[in-house]
Length: 85
Image (cartoon, rainbow, N blue to C red; front, side, top):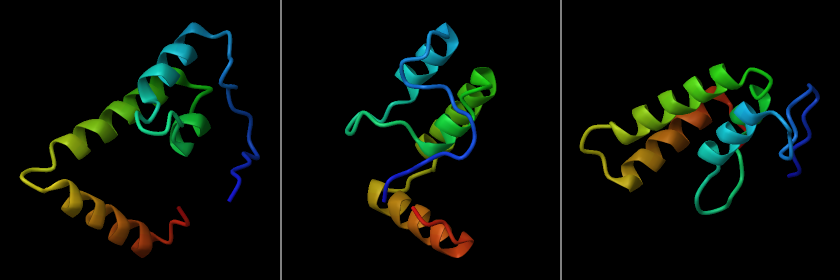
């Protein structure tokens, strides 16, 4: 499904240095893509960076869970809250 934002976001080729730094940091290593949350909060790059850092910290510090267990937890949570992704 193609993702089309209905609110204004910073483009990937933005001239804003903070946004460029954020996008470089937040890109998914395997796909090179940005999360919807990063793009949707890109007009406030400091807040977007803080949200990204929080997500990374929570995911990385998820105790002794294996990668598979983390993914299953994310899938179940997304299903319960009705996330379409």
